[in-house]
Image (cartoon, rainbow, N blue to C red; front, side):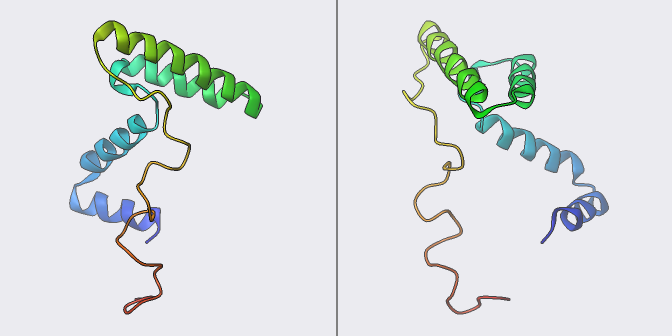
Length: 109
């Protein structure tokens, strides 16, 4: 189902606020240590990442951010993982939606 169709359904059903909240929660999960940041800090981090022009610059921003959040977590008594999740690997093994490769009964419905 494409995003425009989902958006249309959300608007028609009055679910737009819930959809926006779910999207915001998903975005927060992608920022290492987001639970320790203010909304302003998350916005600033996203802006810095968008403004970065090279993969090296983005990596440097991530490394600096990781060190800051790790230190902040220690100060606050919050344990963060040593390494942030690899980009695009937030789901467990198999990529989600249950077992299998998608070629079994019901494929293509």
